[in-house]
Each structure stands twice: as structure tokens, then as C-alpha cells.
Length: 242
Image (cartoon, rainbow, N blue to C red; front, side):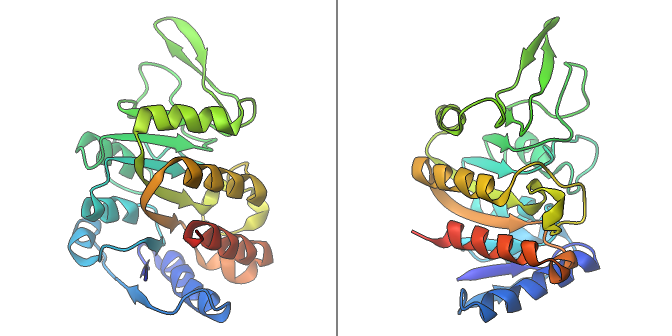
């Protein structure tokens, strides 16, 4: 079964509801459930244990993993979502780590909100970041490069994640990780092509036991995006295929 969570503002809710019809039209879903809530704290009590969740605002992942209770999480996202001010779509992972909803996390494909110094206001504990593009950070007075998808082999990054996270993970895919032309999410898009995203998902599936997964940040922009529809269908098929 698949659980749809039309969470967030109206564009996110409309995008998730549209996705139901898109997947039905392409004969990719039969049984599904819709869970609605205006409060992320209530989601944990409402969502069923499922294999896949399709959600609007990425904050909903916080509610889902409170229900799933995975040991570790992999987030494929254009943003790190590690802001540490108040709980929202830009900080849900920071709070999940701080509250030990998950023990460890890895963020892959990010281009924005990368921690750069020890004095950053972003959460940095028990998380590893593998940006899409070359990035550096200052550690004890010296600059150190992150391993990025641009210059490091995918296999090397996956091996690092496996060593750090262990075998069992929850996988969340924020569709804003794709380049702007895919027009799925509402916020700044990332730098990955669909082919690069599918390769990353495939390698994660080969190397981890995925307890459950979600596809996040779907907005009503997808209705007017041919590339966006194709991307959503292919990502869903990749996640749900054997």
C-alpha cells in the first residue's frame, strides 16, 4: 500500500492529490490511503506503517519517522534541512536528530544551507553531508572539502554512508533535488538530473535495507510540467521496484 499525506500549504496539498490520479492513470497504484493533518506532531499517531509515503511539505517526514522509528535516515535533497531555530520544512532533520527520533543521518545532493564553519547555526552532530557540488568547511582552523557527487564516485559515497549509518535506513527523496526544469517543488531546485537521481536511488537500494521511504515536496507545479510528471513516475517506480 502507499500512503499519501497532503501536508502543508495549498500548493503542496493539491500536488499530492494530483499525484494520486497521476499514478492511478499510469496503473502504478491500486490500494492507497490518504492521511490529513494540519499538525505534524499528530501525524505519528495517524499514519500507518507503510512501505512508501508521498507527501507535500518535507516537514511531514518528521511525523512519519516518529511513527517508523528508523535507526538512520538518508535524505536526498537540495537543502540540508538542518536549520536549528524552529521546527519547519527547513529544520525537520535537525530536530529529528536532536530529539533522537533517528540516531544518524546522511544528506546527499544538497546545494544550499551547507554548514561552513564551526560557528554555524546549523545542526552538525550525527549527520554527514555529501553535496551535489564541491563545498568546503572550516574545522579547527583548516578548510576541509566535503565529498561531493561532482568529484567523488557514487560508490565511494555510498560506502561512506553505509559505514556511518549501518544497514537499515529510512530513505526520503525531496524532489527539489532535481534541476529547475523539472518544476515539481515550490522552492529552489538542485543540480541533479533525473538520471543521476535514479542512479543514486539504485545504489542505495543495492547497499541498504530500506525500511520505508517517501517522496517529498510535491507541489501543484507538477500539473504543468511534463518533465516533472515523468520524474515523479520514474522515481516512484525505482523506489517501489524490486
